[in-house]
Amino acid sequence: MESLATASQLVRLFEDDRVWQGITDDYCAEMDRVEAATNMSKLSVCLTHDPEVVFVLFVRGTTIADVHVIVGEEARGKRAVDAARKAMDEVFTHTTLEKITGMAPADNKGLRIFARACGFRKEGILTKSIRRGGVLRDQIIYTMEKERFYGSGNSNCS
Image 1 (cartoon, one colour):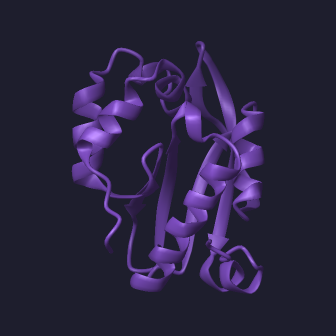
Image 2 (tube, one colour):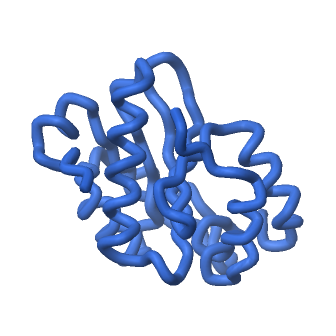
Image 3 (tube, helix red, strand yellow):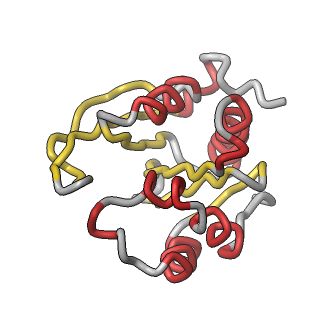
């Protein structure tokens, strides 16, 4: 895959307080952002088709991976959706992965809209699974299967 992101790209995105708050929970609030970015780049596959969007995959086997999409302020909306679709196309084309999963806090409307715009389907709810503001909150589990990605028109990468 030719679109690997670098730790320095993650560090730059993590420096944005809004991005950092969107990807962390209460436990991570005091975490060193450079260290977090460095560790993430070592423990995952980070793809980018846009300097403001990084598609982070934590592979859980030969057929499934968990995704976290990190989006800078300037790339929100269609630009982020297009970059995520390109990354999914690359992943499904060049790996044995058949399914990508992701989670969104149930109270994060923007992230839920983004997941649906990318073509992800709601698969379930993981109750009381993230602590934000001292409160345990539910997360919605979203999935994208390779077969559905290519059969749904979501793979139209321009």
